[in-house]
Length: 446
Image 1: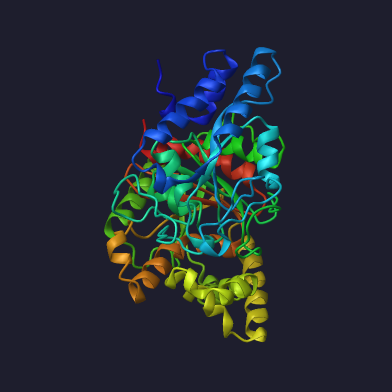
Image 2: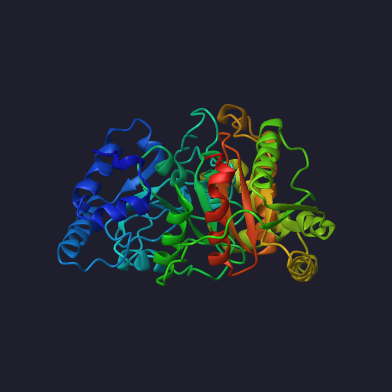
C-alpha cells in the first residue's frame, strides 16, 4: 500500500477517482499523522477535525455516485491562519487577534470547499505575516524540514512545514514579499505567487493589500496548477503536452539578485542554469538597474501601508507583539506622504520598463533565496541580527512582488535552494506550463 502522506495532491485525487482511496480514510490518515507528530503543535495552530471528516464523507458520497467535482475532490489540505474559517479562530499569528472568530469562510476557502477540498486545519505563521524568516515566539515557530533548529521561512511557515513533514498534501499560504516562495524554497516545495487581484482577498487578514496575494505550497507544479483552479473557482491550467526545454529563452537577471549570495545557494543556482542549458534552453543574462530605486524605497512602500492597516491595534497593545515585527510596522510612522506617492509613481514606471525589457523571454529566472535558513537561536539575539537576516532573505522575492508578476518557485537538487520563474501579471497559466516543462531539469531528476 502506498504511503498517502508522501503522495502529491493530484495523485491522491486520482486515487480517489479510481476508487483506490477512500476520502474519509485519507483524512483520518492525515489527522492521525498530525496527532502523532512531535512537531505538530509548532505546525498547526488548530485542527478542524469535525469539518474535515464531514467534508471527507461528502466527498466519499460524491465519488460513489460518480459526481466528483474535480481531480482534488476529497483531498485534505492545510490553511495558513490568516484565512477566515467560520466559527474557528483566525488569529494571523498574533496576540493582537487572540480569540478572533470569524462568522464566514474566506472567499478562497469557500471556492476550495466547493471544489471538494477538505480543510484539515490552520497553520502557524509569522506574526501578521510581516517576516520572511518564519520566526514567531508569540505563538510558535515551525521547524525547517532540512534543519529543525533553523528558521522555516515565512510568513507561510506552518503551511510549508505541514507539507514538508507529511502532515498535509498541500498548504495554502499568502505572499506579500515572498511569504509563499521563501518557505517553499527552504522546505524543498513548489510555491506559486499569484498576481495581485487574481485571487480574492475577502476574508483574508490583510497586511499590505497593494501586495497581498494568495498562493499554494505543494509537492509538484501539477498540484499548484490544480490548486490555482480550485482557489479561483475556474478551470485549472492545462499542463498536458508541454513544450520541450530545448529552445526556451530564459532571461537570467543579474541586478541585485546575485549580490552577497551565500556559496551553497549560488552554486545550486549555477548548477540549475547549467542543466537547463544542457537540455537546450537559451539562458540570456541581463541587467535591470532601474529596479534599484524601487528596491531602495521598498521598505517605505511596505511599512507605510502596513502601519496604516495595523496602527490602532498595535498602539492599543504594543507589548503583545514580538519586538522586531512591531519595529518593522513602526517604520511606517515617519515617511512623508509625498515621498510615498512619488515612490509608487516611480514603481509603476519601472513596471512598464520591465515589461518591455523582458518581453522577448519565456520567463525570467532568479535564485529564490540568496541564503540558507539561519539558526533560530541566532535570530533570537534580535537587534540588527534579525533585521539584517530578514531583509537579505526577502530581497530576491520582494523584487518579484514589486514588479507585480506571476511567479513559480521550483526546488533544486540542493536542500533549501531553488529558482523562481517570473512571468508578467496574470500569466499564471503560462508560467505554470513553463514550470512544468523545466521542473525535472531544475530538480536534477533524469
